[in-house]
Image (cartoon, rainbow, N blue to C red; front, side, top):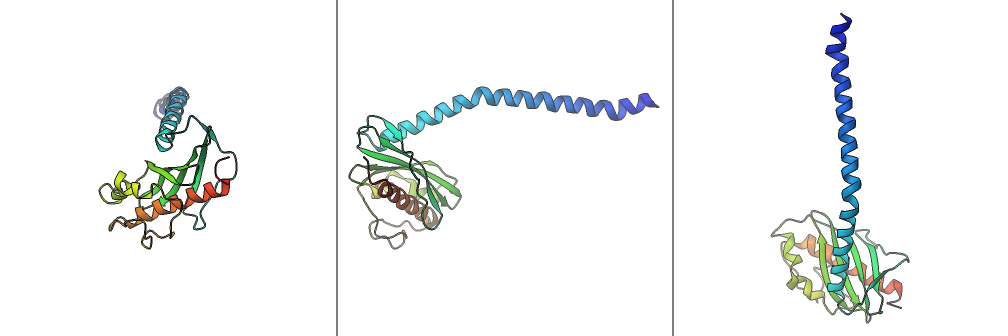
Length: 189
């Protein structure tokens, strides 16, 4: 009877525990090998995007001061890099959109004017929310140093896209947050 109990109950449990331990060990090993590569590629991509948004920059230094969160709590600056030659700054802003968080980079030159916006991550509906992520739509912000309203529907400078209002508002919040960060820094010094 003891032999049957071992074969029926204990042995399968021991085998399953061993399988779980080996699988966990292999996953940890894989993560340890691939994570530095993933982080290196993410940094490289972010640096390339910063260079696109602020083409006059020779390099970037991370801003170590306080990062801004907008008063509604729907957008915050995740990181900020100033150009080493003081031509401007690029902020990474995370804002709430229709599909969840929308991550965008906003380039601002030394005069406080937006040089460009690049969307780096989003979960919005393709063909609907993404209407506001085209170069044409985002190009409306280029050259602006302030917006006349926090609400994209009331903004006279931006052509509002019907059907994509949540994404448009998320972008507007992100731009406001980036401009507030630039002002809080006192520009580039």
